[in-house]
Amino acid sequence: MIKLLFWGFVALDIAALLFFFVLGLAAAGSSRTSPATVALFMLLLPAIPLAGAVWVFLRSSTTLWRVLAFVLAAAPVVVAVSTKAYNDAR
Image (cartoon, rainbow, N blue to C red; front, side):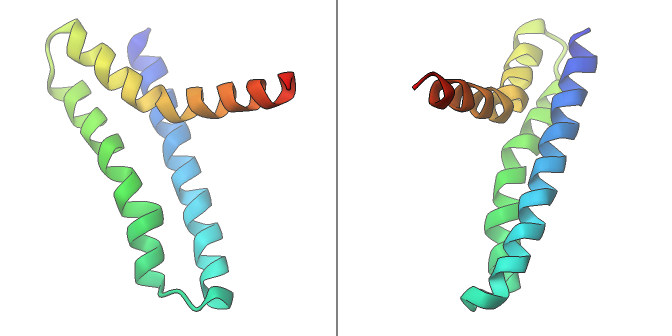
């Protein structure tokens, strides 16, 4: 079950990364930002922890490391949902 949830969160994170990367490229022209800078800050740097989580999840044999990789992959979704809930409650 954790495998299915992990890969679901990874797919959701990749979709969000690509979405914000496209938005960053669209805004780069009007703000005179280099597309290479947008690619670095909006795609490559956020993908490093996600790639690390995938690597740990695939290479680990213990449950603890897999759970830590799962938490790292689920963190962006948890932060977004909790922030939305907090703002709605206020």
